[in-house]
Length: 486
Ligand code: URA
Image (cartoon, rainbow, N blue to C red; front, top):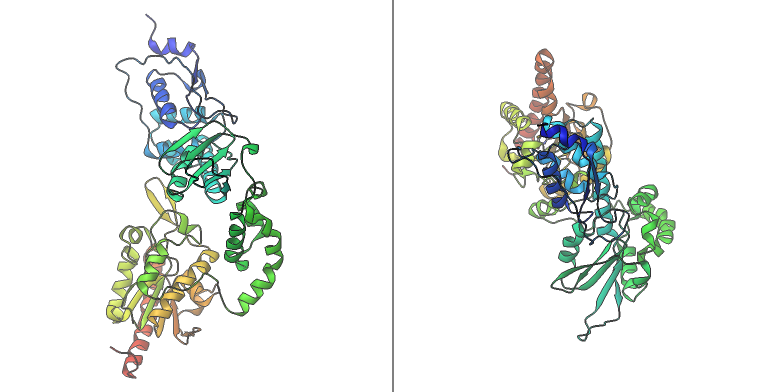
């Protein structure tokens, strides 16, 4: 009798999935095909209406029975996570891409770690586009009030949105949580969602003509948008990228954009003159800063899903030590300088005679910026812009702790405190005056020392120790003069 594998090779299969966004359905079919040893090029995957037809239609299919003793397919967690986003893409080739990668994973279980692999890169590209579409829908859906049609005269809000991908179901939970007490419908060409305050229902695709345009609530939206518009943060290119014109027609506030842009330069000039960064009112305690940074999403690092790490130490410390950003261990433990760089720093502080009780330790950037490498998270330097945006929090800590001395570890911390990039080697070991009259000392970052080898390291550690001794001497001087409280 012919071996099973050869028979399968000759056959081709057409798999009709029940819905374009149903990961479990694809996964069940794919697992069965892998167990039946059907290679990727023998399968044609289809879902109803990949090109914007009915999201909720169903189809038939015939799948080959896998042999009883066929092993269970293996798939890494990275793959499964990414695949759940990829499946929502509107590219009809996504199913075969996923199956090809799953097939390859059986003989190459670490395939997902190879970021240069064309299939892995395609998956990441598609997932990125889906995430972007999800984000756009959350940001740009605008509800309009329609006449109440039910007997209880409950207000009903309707929004029209045109997603690029099959993200409607994936986004439903967000809108239910955000607008729980409202009665609303979101109409799209890929299907509709209806929420009545208790249950969510799905409906067939709609057209733009089904959605209302204009209502009295729009004036509120416009007023709100005009009040939160920050001219200092206006970047027209980036704004068009983030808020492409195609969404404008559904957004009442978009009518204001040309006018606000025109007035932006004048407003920005006024703000710069007034020295504002216009992030609103500063938190009034270290605890409040600690809470607020957890929710900070002002830069990309803040949006990377890590937990922000607050400074810690004496709340009236004479010396504030500023690092760059929390590392892997710091993010895990939610405490600054508790990893290898922190241990080296503490050894040197002790040797220099700088007591813990007089220091407050924090970072220029509050979230951990990293590049995923398999299970590891590789540190990445923050950009100048990210440092500048995060300075708002460091300034808040300085305003509350009021240290007489500030020690910047490395170039990022120095930039945050000076507002410009400097060469650490040129400015280290001598005092600089900060805007509030406190004294800034700059030295290298302990992580830099950890990366050096042999002689280089020994030499740099001596310089580092010398810098800390100078800071310790200044600290003692301040105490001998009796100004700070011990
Ligand atoms: N490096 C830093 O700059 N800060 C930390 O908290 C840890 C390592």
